[in-house]
Amino acid sequence: MSSVAALYARISSDPEGKQVGVANQEAAARRIADAHGLTVSRVYLDNDASASTNSRAARPEFDAMLAAAERGEFDTIIAYSMSRLTRRPAEWERLIDLAQTRGVRYLYEASPRYDLNTADGRATARTVAAWDAAEAERTSERRKFGNAAKTQKGIPAGRPRVFGFEQDGMTPREEEAELLRAAYASIIEGATVREVARTWNIAGSRTTRGGEWSAVSARRALLRERNAGILVANGVVQPVSQITPIIDLDTFEAVRSILTTARPEHRGRPSADRYLSGVATCSCGAPLVVGRWASRGQNGPAYVCQEIQQAIRTPGRKVPPGHARIKAELLEEGIHWSVLSALRDNAPAEQATPERRALIAQRAAIAEQLERAKAVYAEFGAADDLARARKLQAEHDALSQRIDALSADTGHAAIIAAARAALAARDEWWHAFAADDATFEASESAMNDAEDAFLAHWGDLDADGRRALVRATLAAVRVNQPGDERGRIQIVTHANVRAYEARKAEREKGQDR
Image (cartoon, rainbow, N blue to C red; front, top):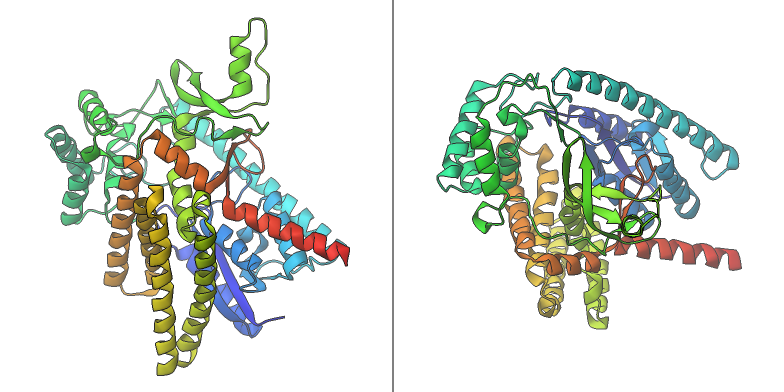
């Protein structure tokens, strides 16, 4: 057993982005590490992210932690409690698998320890996980009933405060409402959302999470129906609303038309043709094709299981149950971020030539040496250790440039470079949490700019370009039935597939012995 551990902290809701909950969990986990004589290799923080069976929220840090454990970077995971790690039974199976195949152990502040290498330990852990999941589902049911009652009265549901409104979600906060009114007027006069974001930042305004405005967040604020007094629940406009409007409906519709038209100067979150048609699949295995959704007098584009479309077109054939139909914008909403995360290794499947694979493997080996060198320097502070770390960093950067050069003929080089810059900026932002306010604000601003640049490249791709990049980076985009423990939308990267195949080969090798 080594002396290296990873810490994990998560809080389901942090509407103001203060991170007090995860900070307290991290402090408790560090006490456990000290008590067991463990060195912390990395802290993984998922803030404002639920781990319940009903949540669709992504937990990128949780997934990154499990991937690192698969690579053998540590063999102990410390969390405040079992439920902080996950409430999803399917994810518990992944944790149990790590214990059995990699020897990973789990330490908690507020939960007992179970030996997951024994049948009794696994049975107990699964039982506790099942009760955790049940409690999360009961909480979700109570919240849904409460939200439904509010919606019927025309009252917005949900805890996070919305920009422009007080905490009740209905009363305008006048200083923010004035900024919104001025922004709507400037957009109609020809200003861009990036200029709106810049104006708000200069005025000292911040998002409700305390961050600086970017083109993406400003566009999101301007497209919020609530600004016109419209109450939307589950994507459906409600007939009753007690919201006091900030701007009139005509102004809102005019700006919405401008911002949702594919004009590069107004583009915030990318818009394109239905590029996931034929790429995404239903849980039955059939491809999703372009169709329509309709509910309560509303309708719009959707991705529909091919089985449903064939049934609709066949006289006398009933539409079969258990097949996927999902709003197009809901499925596409996070795909560009999934592509961004998959590009962390800068290795889309279509570009994996033998020369490029060799360079990527060489860079990965140097990256491991670099992390060790940084850890040694952090502990001892010797000048020789710093010099070695800088030398390795230079070698790593040189290899990245050679890999990028080999990518130039694929048409994806620009977006890969933008993705790498955005990911690097995001890493810097995470590392700046403990820094002074000025450093943190600068890193957050740089991250927003880098992510905007990535989105601009994504927005420049046509449907065929996006489809090709999705296929190159993601092994599967699967839409499951509501309530599926794997989540409504399941993203599988090529890295996930390779890790699974490696585990499978290792198990088969062990059985042969």
